[in-house]
Length: 159
Length: 82
Image (tube, rainbow over all chains, first blue to last red):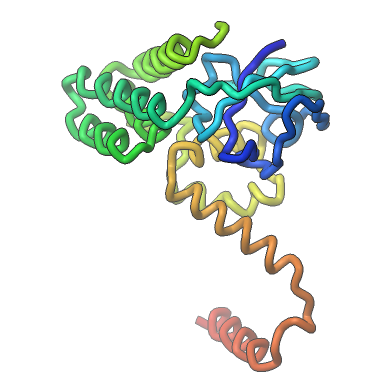
């Protein structure tokens, strides 16, 4: 199946430190959050933002909370549309969503500051937390869903 | 209001050793890593810990200078008695 994977600059895994090759199958015993090949469905993307986004082919993937885990995977291509400009636009959308809540001005200021500083993941988290404060747990989930939809639409990802 | 599954920065610091040793439950490990994605401070802290482990993990007893060893022993004695 096709999925997506955020990596640090140079195709490095954020938590594993593994330098991913392109096109070669990588294998690891699949244990959620511990080992195996971890990747995202479009709905998972807002939780794992990083510098590079790659399309990854997974073999034998199973769904876990906010991620997929598989015993085998290989990077197929970089999603070039995810760059600094898109990350900033995404962060701006999170700041705007926070401001639109109306009842979370401090969070709106924080999200705007994070967006201005290029901290997309932080702006996304602040937006979701602010939505939770105003609308309850459902607000958190709805804001994360909005973020995922924004990313899938802007990056042209298969949903 | 705080999500039940949110970690604070202070909690993350408390868990960092368990994280490195693979001792966290899958759910806690997930919360830990989600926090690191959006928190630059904790990401830097985790990187620092990782580098420290990499460097000190290569040290042997012979690598520690006698003077430094005496200072460390004295410091820990003071810590234990305080």
